[in-house]
Amino acid sequence: TDMQAAVGVAQLDKLPAFIASFESGTRTGAERSLVAARGAESAMSGPTPVAFPVSIVVNRETRTYQANGIAAQNLMVTGTAPLPENVLMELRLASTPPLSCWATAKLSWAAGGAYTVILQPFALDAPARESWKALVRQDTTAAA
Image (tube, rainbow, N blue to C red; front, side):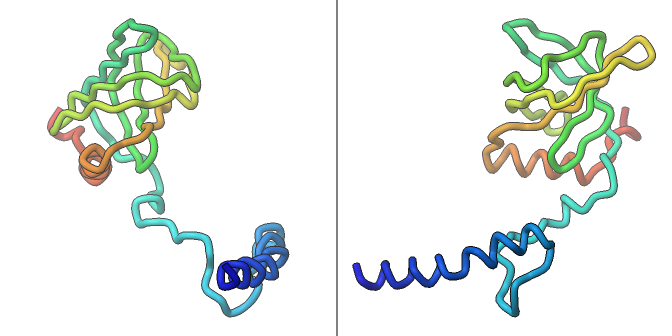
């Protein structure tokens, strides 16, 4: 319709300044930002210490790791073998409450005879996301 075309043209006029704002890091005017503000959980300075077992199923093989840190978008685990990076795998966290989800390994390195792996959860549904956030807010190492 004519109304939709007018809206589209108005937005196209703003596009060059919007793209330039990413390059310069400055806003183009008094309009509100089109980039969503980060939530409070993304401003954490580091992972929350945790201590619970994590079962990871990769290539139909179940491996056991120990969780030692959790953040808004990552879980750090330690185990006896590396995990393949960027491969979808199933996680079963023996946390309170227990949580099952999918994740990918983003980084894996050897240290002190073990392997540390940074996992990133994938496609958490609303209940799982709330359970994850609850784990980030609590320190479980005292109970371990």
